Image (cartoon, rainbow, N blue to C red; front, side, top):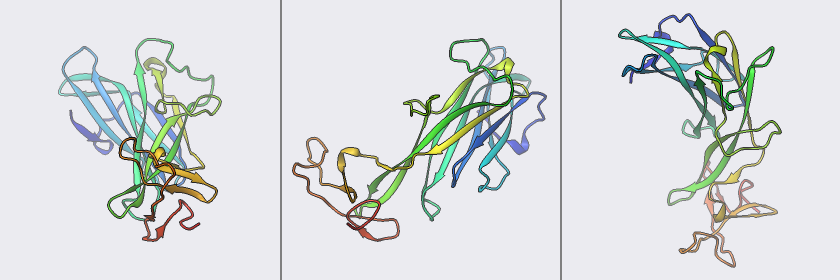
Length: 235
């Protein structure tokens, strides 16, 4: 597969607009996946990044529905959305997860119909999961993004939508992304929640759960502070 960036792409006659409404310190990019119309052994990927400042809460990308390579005509099959969130001040204080769009040729129960006006909107929520890493037990964070249903309930699947190809040209598809207010531990069995915050405990070798009664340990914040409870550091 060839990976071609949008600045070098061929001008397309049909496309749709992807928008993303993002929380602070989040960005998103798209990788489009194309496959042959006639079943030929050809495929292609293109990467798209917004040219807007990273501080802009609304990202907008123009995504082509068709492409060609060496005489092979191809159509868009899926879009992988790469969500990047930054949790600290250092360059490495970030993590990524994905969302996606699937493109179908025929109607099905999973296809999302477009509204009479305005964009087709799907929602997702990202959750920061904290854990310790390394012999000095520094706190790091993992990003987990999942779909929200119409009632705002977090689902098990990734955020995204299934779309019908002949309905897409000239339309807008929008992802609205939020962040959970509370962080939770990545290894939930290794932390106990107390009135002062989350405390990491020594695990049993058999079950990798907190010992009973629990024996607590310390950890380090990214700034080097020695702490006993997260996120407050001291009790």
